Length: 442
Image (cartoon, rainbow, N blue to C red; front, side):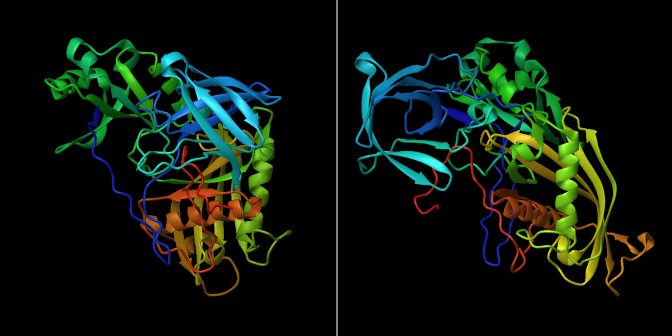
């Protein structure tokens, strides 16, 4: 059993017109990718409880001339040994034996394809028993996806900038000082007098030990992690004896992302500054000129991009920057005004990217607006600061949904700032890390 120290944030559901209000999604890790061995394929496996408390196991299967061999493993860094997998593929039926000896279990699957996923579903459906499913995207999972998992089916989406660390109750009972690997982790805390902030886990260790006293339930603590460092840190922490599991948090943060082909932005494993600048500058010119996502060339609306540059972010990744002045109908699908704002866009490989995609995460700051009195751009002095996060949320939503529509891909958008998604706007759907695509997906 495990219990969580931090309270959970409720997730609002959308309505029509859709109110996009929640908290974010996905989990991000660095922008490098390691391809699997050529003959083997990765699958995420649901319903195989070999590596609790994780919901999924990582199945690596080699199917050759009807014979199947491979393993079922926990997320990367977990010290538990993989479980052997063997079987056959005959006449479209995949028969697998998971485990060995008295701990061997026989299963049969049939293949399906939903959306961009290859699926193996159990051939039988036993009422009251969770089915076993194997699935993989066409481009394979990214390295972060194989390392980052979540524990709870009812989480709120793709998370980045944090991890949940499950501490063993036995370690808390027996260890008076935080282990070195855990001590410097930053834990979000709140105070009646000082508001919110962070403290080192080593400074909270005694309080956590007290919370676990007389209780055999493991304790879950959310920690703050630099964006892009989640996967590597998760793998490292899983090797500590005091840690039962490391996963993405159920708590939510605010952001949006659009998925694009990695060849648009990268040369091999590394993001190219030149490609990033060329791609985004071109996309923003089309978007803010009022061009439809499936159009070519430049539209007829007035707009201005200034200060276009690529700089290094805190995690060492390049970040695209620009100051945008645009018609509100192009920037957030609302008539009658102008927006001016600073835009930063971070490219990353997230836990939900396949091996051939990357995600773009925009940040909108210093938003100002002006009323529209004609077709020409107003002077900078006409713009007034707007203290309304819903406007910035609408701009981010418009950008990621337009990019996803232009690429025929997907976007994820979750935010604490509720706003009515305009009629005719491109929509974002949220795809979680390890959910099997629904049978109605196409």
